[in-house]
Amino acid sequence: MFAVVLAGGEGTRLRPLTRTIAKSMVPVLNRPFLEHLIARLARHGISDAAFTLGYRADQVEAHFSSRRFRNVGLHFTREEVPLGTAGGVKALASLLTETFLVLNGDIYTDLDLTAALDFHRRNKALVTIVLTPVDDPTPYGMVETEPDSRIRRFLEKPAPDQVTTVWVNAGTYIMEPAALELVPPNGPYMFERGLFPTLLERGEPLFAYKSTCFWSDLGTPRRYLDLHEQLLLGRIDTPVPGHQLRPGVWSGQGWEVDASAQLHGPVVMGNGCTIGPGAVLQGPLVLGDGVVIGQDARVSGSVLWAGVRVGDKAVVEGSILGNGVAIGEGSFIGNGCVLADGASVGSGNRLERGMTLGPGKRLEDGAVFFLLGPASHR
Image (tube, rainbow, N blue to C red; front, top):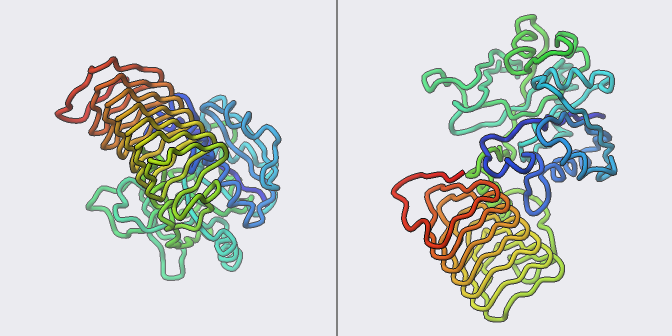
């Protein structure tokens, strides 16, 4: 069975991180997100996965150059111009000769795909859309259903006074090849605003599979941090990478932790991490490969990508630091800050309240002391 993964978006809500990396390749527990997704497909017996790529497609193809991962055959197609969700899948129609899956490339979930496929077949559906409940449906595609699970109505991004249900489109579809016949070739076309409403108007069998599984859209820095918190606190059954050094602390190979350092889990360290004397690590926390934490530094509730260096007596709280970020001695980075690949912060700075720093940008020593509100240095 084929799965089509929609992975061509630019990840604008995750900027500045995605200025240098494809959103689908953003690390989750030190592994590119797509590795987690493909592993889940393999667990449910999916034989092949086709990826619709656009922004930074070369990164995805280079990472999966063997064209096979976890016994799943990988196929890549590049969109020179955006084709939309349905248009991109239509371009793969020659591969999709039997029931197939469509998945968004930025949703982390433990959805039981096998059970959803059984539901689809049992109801003889042309399309089954997986739904999930959310507290606030307004940023999503709200879906109303009949008692027999047939879909009654779609409403994209409803206004607060239009909300009639908490169930929204979860970004996973099960489809029959015939569903693509109404998708125009070689042009942009959307499932959500084009194909699905058209099929509904024609009275085709569109069904909703309601699931209360774990579901997280990692499209914003806040949600990205929340996802790691959920994974590290065990709220979804996901293997933690590395060897368990002691309860709540995992590490890859070649680690060095000074005897005076304090590690309070859950903490995940990649290969070759170095933790200096008197440093304090407080989970939930993920350190990528080659991260160096200086003497008496404190790092908590954050995700640090590969090669980050945190100087002596510096503090990092509730933030995301991209590859190769450097934090100077005594600086404070906290409250949702996001620093992209190669950014550096000199000594004695204080960044907080969601401040961002673009790729390769540098703040000199003592450049920022206090912020009265949200700010951005790009």
